[in-house]
Each structure stands twice: as C-alpha cells, then as structure tokens.
Length: 112
Image (cartoon, rainbow, N blue to C red; front, side, top):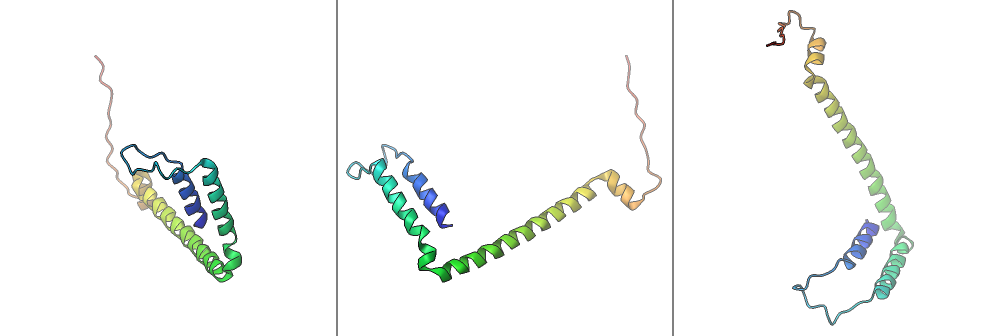
C-alpha cells in the first residue's frame, strides 16, 4: 500500500499544470531535486518495518486474510457464473430436465 502511494505521488509530480491553475512560478523544483526527494522517501519507507515490526506483522496478517477473502469471493463468482451458464443454455436445460414431446418447427427456404 505504501509503495502504491509512493509511486502515485511520484507520478503526480510529473503531471504538467495548466496555465490558469495556481501560480507555481516561485516554487520551481528541478527534476534532480524531485528524484532526490523520491529516493529519500523510498529509503524511509524501506526502513518502516525495521522501526515498526508489529505494524508490519499486522499488515502481513491482514493481507493474507484479504488474499484468502479475494480468492473465496472469486470462487463464489465463478460458481455463480457457471451455474447461470448451465441454466441459460436452453438445450442443456431441456436435457437436464429430460423434457419430452418438444414441439419442433420446420422451416424451408423460399426460392423465386
């Protein structure tokens, strides 16, 4: 999550501003300063788990639980879609119900 925020912030720094927006002329930041700041922020984030091991353990447990819930949800959706696919197929539904005496319509082409 922190990496995502970091990369989004880095991406936003490179988006150009419009002329009619806030006056940023007195707040010029060079590309080199931007990369230096990004490097410092990344280094700080990289050491986060060293400084806060309990927080990182909690995050790992949360992400493992989230992954399991996502997998379970995906399996539920797939089962629902497979079930819907079977009942949406009229031939399969008829065969499954073993319906007899099906009315058939015979068509032919019309020639001139």
